[in-house]
Length: 191
Image 1 (cartoon, rainbow, N blue to C red):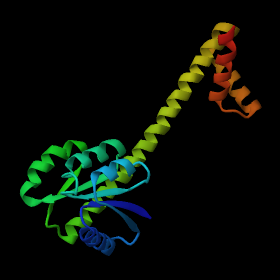
Image 2 (cartoon, rainbow, N blue to C red):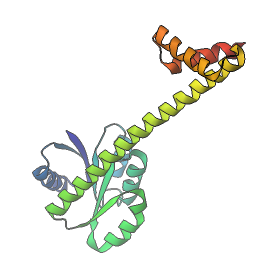
Image 3 (cartoon, rainbow, N blue to C red):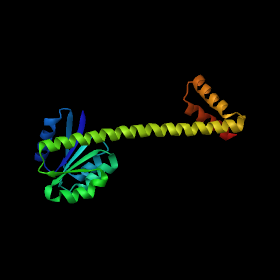
Image 4 (tube, rainbow, N blue to C red):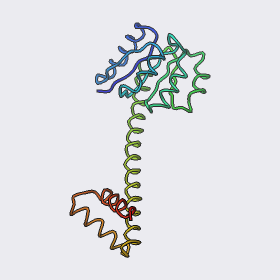
């Protein structure tokens, strides 16, 4: 179940937004906060899939809060503003990845915006996970290559011999090649 944070000044507007969301999505639960101060404090405590800000809030307008959330968390952010200021607000937050919608809002437009924002959020998280995996792989290669250089220098092995040695030792000791490489670097750096 995906969790949506709805930030709006009144409980009445929270219930209206929740009703509109639940009419389109049965697998979404929502949480209500009414001011930016509480949001800034609690945003990292829960893994939200989407944040909807109904501007203005009790303690601030909401555009800076939307930018803060998008910047700090990578969560999809929808900012709802009056139609007469839509263009100005949209221009000021677009580079941060905040999607601005003019009020009054039709249920169809809200549903499509939520669907698109969630799709972007999911794709972004998928790319972040892939990026993290690639970084770990590159880091592993860097450490293993460093260990090969140590074996080449200290033990006068060739590169293929050093590679085979690290692989065999990893299999024999049931360790990862990275762990074996770190061990070899640690042993030979003391000499």
